[in-house]
Image (cartoon, rainbow, N blue to C red):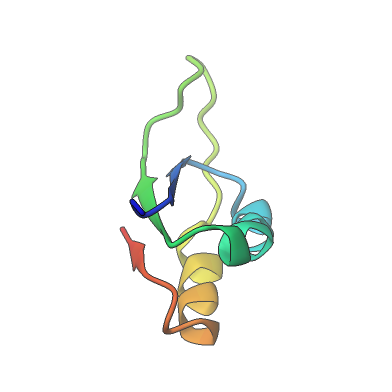
Length: 68
């Protein structure tokens, strides 16, 4: 069976990233996360901190593969 991996593009919204990863962890074999400093929507200039929640999630779940 092929691995089932989640793909995220994170620009802002760090508060949801950790919760979202937690919600899919038991149904997926890992996650690939692309952190961006550019928005998909022109004109959005504020960025959120996605790294801290991501690092916290990785520390809590070391056996769940996350590629950044």
